[in-house]
Each structure stands twice: as C-alpha cells, then as structure tokens.
Image (cartoon, rainbow, N blue to C red):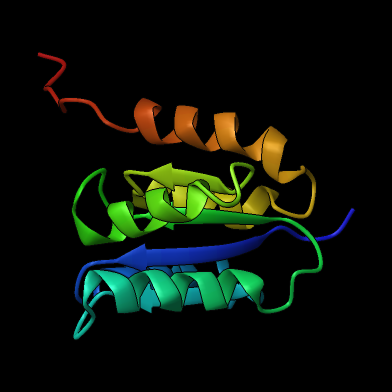
Length: 131
C-alpha cells in the first residue's frame, strides 16, 4: 500500500509549527505539504490549495485544516464542489497528526479519516488530580 500524502493548512505559522513538532517526536516525514494563509486572499489561498492537490496526484491525500472556519476551511470547502472525494479533516491537533504519520503506510485515506478523528477527540480531556 502506498503512503498517504498529507497537506497541512493553517493560519499563520501553525501548519509549519505543528509539522515541525510532530517530526521532533516521530522523525522527519516525506509527502507532506504545508500551506499558510499568510498574505493570501480567499481566491489565492484556494488556488494555492488546488495547485498543491493537483501536484503529484499519485496515491491518496488527506488535507488537514487547523480549525473549522475561516479562510482555510472556506477555501477547502469551495474545492469540494468540483471534487467531493477530497479527504478533508478540520480541527487538527498534535495527537491526530502523530497518528497520521505513524499509520499512513498501513491504511488507506478512507480508513484513516475515522481513526484520526477518534484519536483527536480521545486526546481532549480535563486533567485532574487523583486525590
């Protein structure tokens, strides 16, 4: 099975920083593209994402967006109109990205999406003392 490609999209330096942090934990990754909305209009951001998705179309891709809302998500949503089969996950967190890096050689994109969403949700909780 081919490794699933990741496209990480975020506001400001978020995408670059979260990838750098995940790579410090699991090692350098291949087939990962990073897109920032800095200096982009909605139209230029959408075009940037579209060009990235069209580049090296071999294999499957999962697009990760930092939060559900804003220019990054709107740009991805607009691309779904022409290609409803794009795998897009909104609300990226570090446990989700690490899980993606560790499992993307073992599962297809369709199999990974629910696994990654569960991992993200399972890692959001209130830390409490056991006293």
